[in-house]
Amino acid sequence: MTDLIPAPPRPRCGDFGHKAKGSGAPCAAVVLPGLTCCWWHGAGAPQTRAKAEAMLASLRVPATQALMMIIYRWLEDPCPTCGYPRQGDSDQQRTIVATAKAIYDRTGMGPRATLEVTRPADPALDVSCYTAGELERLDELLEGLDRLKVEVADRLAQQTALAPSEVSVVPSNP
Image 1 (cartoon, rainbow, N blue to C red):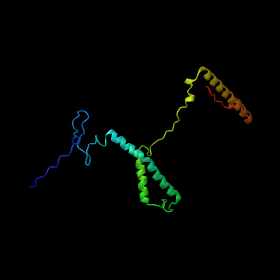
Image 2: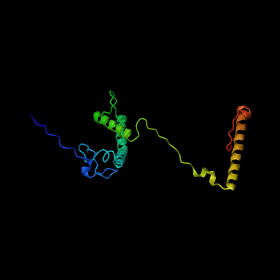
Image 3: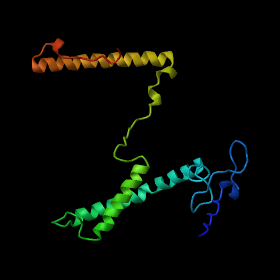
Image 4: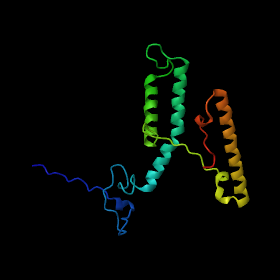
């Protein structure tokens, strides 16, 4: 009969100096194979995740440059049969495209990403900081703009033979 040799005990995260958050005792979690810490002290730690995100984000520009290089080659001299560029290894280019797609997906720029472009508010349009005299002048300017709109509507009505009531005028200061 053969005696089974028991497997050596797997190292614990606390063996490498990591402590449990609540008690301060050595971490009892099993170390991941090939590493010196458990999930919580290694890949799952906030600082590790933040560093990984920063590294992936820094890869966006080189990935975009590689894609642009492939696109430029396609535009220069594509193969009439397959449409891929004649220059270079198409397997290598497919690998580059797949890698760039993975980078974009993992950094939030995948196929479902949305982009919202907003313009910051113009501080000159904030009327709360205007004096009473400036507000009065602004009202006069808006009334003048309304008069100009009516004049233009009248002129257009005369040119097109429409009644002035058929030409809509939107007041500037409702």
